[in-house]
Amino acid sequence: EDKVVQSPLSLVVHEGDTVTLNCSYEVTNFRSLLWYKQEKKAPTFLFMLTSSGIEKKSGRLSSILDKKELFSILNITATQTGDSAIYLCAVEAGGSGTYKYIFGTGTRLKVLA
Amino acid sequence: GAVVSQHPSWVICKSGTSVKIECRSLDFQATTMFWYRQFPKQSLMLMATSNEGSKATYEQGVEKDKFLINHASLTLSTLTVTSAHPEDSSFYICSARGPGLQYFGPGTRLTVL
Image 1 (cartoon, rainbow over the protein chains, first blue to last red):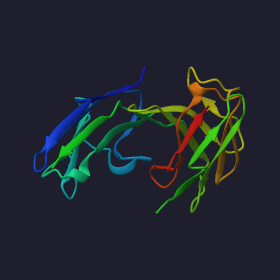
Image 2 (cartoon, one colour):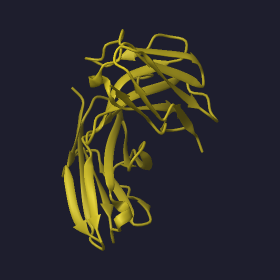
Image 3 (cartoon, rainbow over the protein chains, first blue to last red):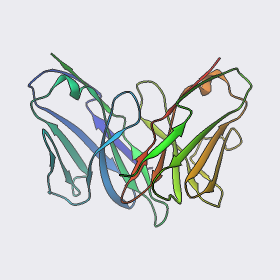
């Protein structure tokens, strides 16, 4: 059975700290791994990763994928209170024409002022 | 960018009634749309994959007679929760497969009294 596991489940840090969120997966026919940020409504897209070892960066956020070890990390540096959210990892997998997203459990991040 | 809308954004109904939720891709055509359910403090759970012009594919454990999905056009999919009960109260999110990604709607919060 396909599964995506995130750790930690929750995290509380202070502004300015750096955090690393983890996502490991076991799926059939991996296509891509995605990171989303969810506040009160629907998830907002952060990154899509398809190749191993290539870091994607957007401001204070960065992410990298290891397809050999089947995991990805999301780093947030100099955290701010606005980074408080649930961070979701999803893996797109499946057969040709039937790709779907399998979401992990999410990591709930709270950044204290 | 690709935009997906959902309507209504929230709905309260009495137990035993049916509720219809619409998901529209506003600026692109989507042959495939997805319906997710999210319980408080949990991740997104895929309920079904909706394909335009054909029957939806339901995930294991999701009752197809309770959650009716219709994907009548390339820009509209609907989810009808039939004979709703309090345990159906949840956050329902749709997504549409667009250029390179799934694009998520803002979600519909359903409360069944």
